[in-house]
Image (tube, rainbow, N blue to C red; front, side, top):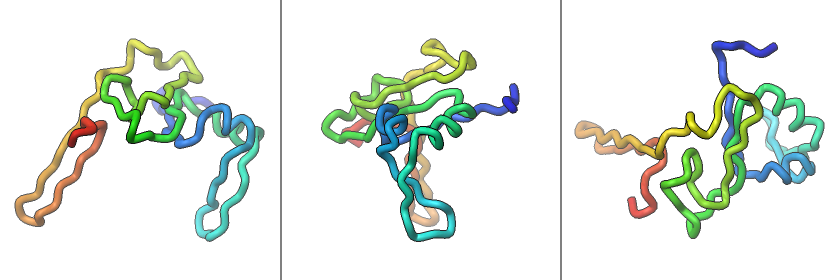
Length: 114
């Protein structure tokens, strides 16, 4: 059942072709072993997705001008009409620096030079 107030997207290191071809692995919670995925399983998951970002991050192809993608080889695919290209904002990132604990957290898509 699709909920209008709930949206799901996925970031996958696999390409859409690999997922549809069953060339992927997944690890069930609480186990140590990996299981080969198959097309039927991904199709079952895909029915709940509004969008996905597919492809491995490649440092040599890092970019900041391709929304939601960290490298040029990745692609955004929309599975519903909930979102489209106009909804994709320019890349951004946030840095949190703790003066007390001496740690920093970077979220989002920082430039490769960072």
